[in-house]
Length: 300
Image (tube, rainbow, N blue to C red; front, side):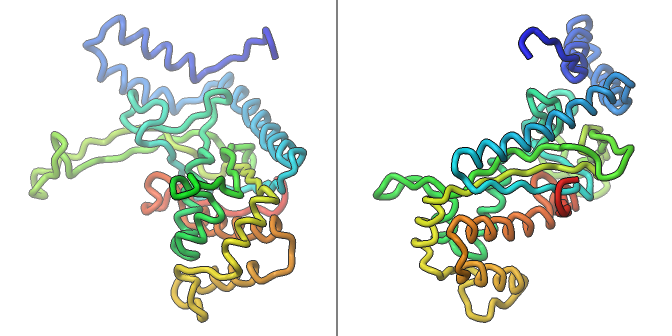
């Protein structure tokens, strides 16, 4: 790829935005408005470039999985369809200075993505609830303590878009948030004082298919399961596994008591937890129905 120039419409858009502001800084609000509207209009060049980027991302997902396998890990590759609008990196992602709401965009591919660190954090948070903090630490690692910490047995890679579930889907979509009840950084005390101020910004289009790779280290998996000792705490610590986690706990206990190799048992455990997290929604505005995924069978 040395010496090969690849068109980057996203970089061009940012460059044009900065150039306009330098010409007339007083017109910032107008420029922002134009940028918000213009970002929703795809040219044919952008569509072609996004198609190339999705194919490149699919290749990255495959190569990452093969790389972990070659290094001795048990690599798991999954594909999920985004079934609701997506938004990740709202608090500090690219384009936050433009739209006031950011979006995590891959620096090389120019595509929205879900960082592996955030995915691992979300899965670990569920593990702490259903398995207990000690069990989660054994699987995902910890820092500090008398021994100075322990590396986790599981590595999560970034979840990248690799294509469309159905032909004709897009990558980005326009979203609008209207923060009615805050003014000057403070809550509005009376309903009659609320003034809707719509903020248009970019999000991720539902229908995109994302590829996820996580890998389990065999030796660390054995150590993690030895630390667990076949038992867990948290919501799954009881014998009946009652409550909203009943079905999940039944799967967890079955996996921990199976006779499969340690890395296979741990990979299956992480799969169950990951699928539970993604099917309920992750990242920004998940309580509003954003970022909900559906597992696909095989590679689309």
